[in-house]
Length: 186
Ligand SMILES: [Fe+2]
Ligand SMILES: [Fe+2]
Image (cartoon, rainbow, N blue to C red; front, top):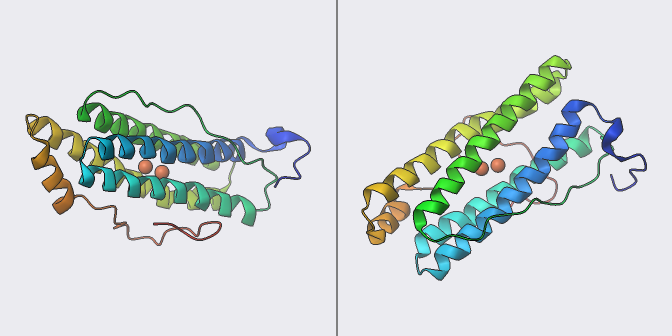
């Protein structure tokens, strides 16, 4: 992996996008730490806890892709992460950001699946299925959270109760999650 001497330019489009996806997942992980610490600082422990856990899930997603790249003996360079948002003024901003982010990730996986099919990379296409299914859940969760915040009319204690009672980071998918490189954290 680190012995990459010719950069990632020799990779197929599918693998280049998959390496980009490692960056997107690590960026999402870091973004959710920023969201969690903002809630933590506002004394909203349930929202903080939810996003700390969400951050670990995103890290696992990155490491599942890393595992796959290693198993396929793809010569890649581990990417860094993109800039994150840290300037928030209201809880709604953070939930809206999370929803936007999850929708973007859904589009990224769907594009990846299309490219895998175009390149007749059926192993790659199959690997993506778990992520595509997972994204349905993630978008739905963030959309629910945003609706609940909007309906709370500023009563964040109600939002905290809802998060504690109804929002879980549990993976309810019917497919087993792909293995991570190194131990899974969530
Ligand atoms: Fe993810
Ligand atoms: Fe996500």
